Length: 197
Image (cartoon, rainbow, N blue to C red; front, side):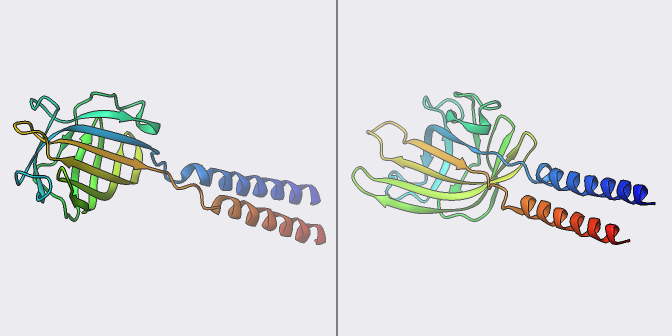
């Protein structure tokens, strides 16, 4: 009878420990990395110092869509420098949620909010900050912060813009370690109870 009890205890303990260790793998897989896009924009006014909206986005020679200037982290296997990027048209600098704000190489960014951080200066310019969630390539939606900037160009040329977005994954908050600790305490309590029988 004692051998059967020990076998049951061993199977139970192995199952609990296995499920605890697998908990970490079952958690969200978020992407860590950053992307930078560049090109030209058409604004709703003749000056970045007074603009409130991007009407359209273009590449540097004003013939296509903006492109990726740099990428790192988890974006590197999927995104290449120079790849075209699609941005939503008619974006107000003070904005609420905007699904599919930009997309590139299978990643999509859903805007949560944006606001003007600074505007004016000499030459006049604008910096807009915001946040949202990027998803794609099997990653769970990942929170990102970003910054858009442009300033008045020389006469006769469109304003050049830069858009930088970065994310960081949130490390395990210790729930797996805590769960493992509870499993070990439970196994020890069962072992003592079975020894007493």
